[in-house]
Structures are given as structure tokens and as C-alpha cells.
Length: 133
Image 1: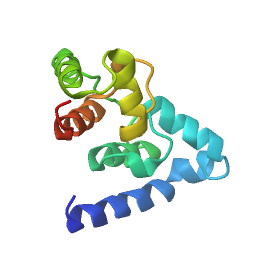
Image 2 (image 1 turned 135 degrees about the horizontal axis):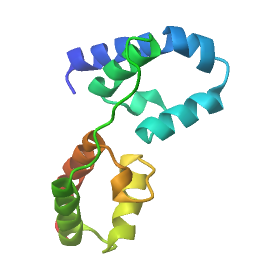
Image 3 (image 1 turned 30 degrees about the horizontal axis):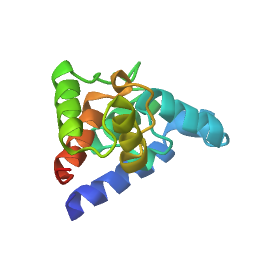
């Protein structure tokens, strides 16, 4: 991430925490905020969201969007992820991949279908960087 992107992300995070809905609903209830993020994005903190996810979230929290639409993982992403994991993963199989996603990527999912398209892209990049076992 470039310095300009980091600064933009910080500005978006500030907009999230100063938005109308955040101040009205979530500012005084950390657990509720974490549950909201987990159910919509699969993360516990807004700092783990991408710039595009933050932009949608800011609009939603300022009542400019009626919902948060998250694109689901594609079948091609699932197949490629499984291929890379079988080629590079230490603990073969879906459970090893899910453990990698949780520990290394910081995304808590029970099955691959719980990933968003953007999260899947991040996991694929992480898998591509792994050395071949």
C-alpha cells in the first residue's frame, strides 16, 4: 500500500468513527460494533477493511446506502485457492486452508463460502507468496 493509500485509509477510518449511525448506535457499545463488522465483513475491527469496503461502510453509516452489499467468493476463486493450498500448504485439505485463513490472514470463517470476493483475493495473494512445500 502506498503512502497516499495509507493516508486515504486513515481518513476513511476517521469518517467511519465520526459518522451519524456510528455515533448514534455503535460508539458506546464495542461488542455491538464488533458483531456488526463480523457479520458483514468477517473482521473484528474496521482497520482490517480495504479502502473500497471502507467507502461503502462510510456511505452506509451516513445513511447514503440502504444496505452493505458484499460480493461473494466466486467458484473460480475457490478452485484456485484449493489448488494453491494443495500445492503449497503444510496441512493439506480444507481444514488446513481454513486454519491458514484464520491465523495468517486474520479472517474468521467456517467455510470458504463465507469469504467475500475481496477477502478471497487477499487470501489468494497470501497463498501465492507461500513457498512450495
